[in-house]
Length: 233
Image (cartoon, rainbow, N blue to C red; front, side, top):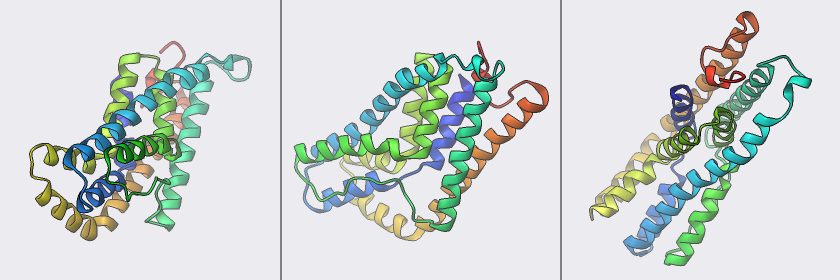
């Protein structure tokens, strides 16, 4: 369980996305009610986590249940999955390195009503499938096979990756969002390049560690980083 949660936290840092908070800030600035912004945040956070759990428990389980041993040696399927995730993460890191502002497509803002923000939040949650770090977690958590681990991993990922939105929602709950909005705008303007670089570095770290784990399996027949991916693990 701990190996998957560590992967979820690392992928969350790699997928750190201020877009959700930016939409909430824009909505507040446009006159949206605090409770409507909280609905948006709740739909984004719970919806994304639920969407990830559903995908891991269905597609991830089906992937795990496929008769891989007809094609590859025991544990070879886990190595192939881990290598595929590593390649995807490193490829996304290369894109981010060349274009630091590159982000998964997200729905635009501009809505201030409760229903509109709820729909926007649902769309935001669904577009998580366009984020390579989310897809990587879907595969890894589904391979683990534990419902508790899967739920915890996806909750951890969304909290870390949407930490700016979580902080803003907490400020709204406490009635201190005006200062939080001003602070967020200043921080985003000043630290966006550094945050982008940190996310890219986390992608390289996550992808590199997984690639090294595959190399270790090739050399020794054992996984070090994600032993739970092994057959029967």
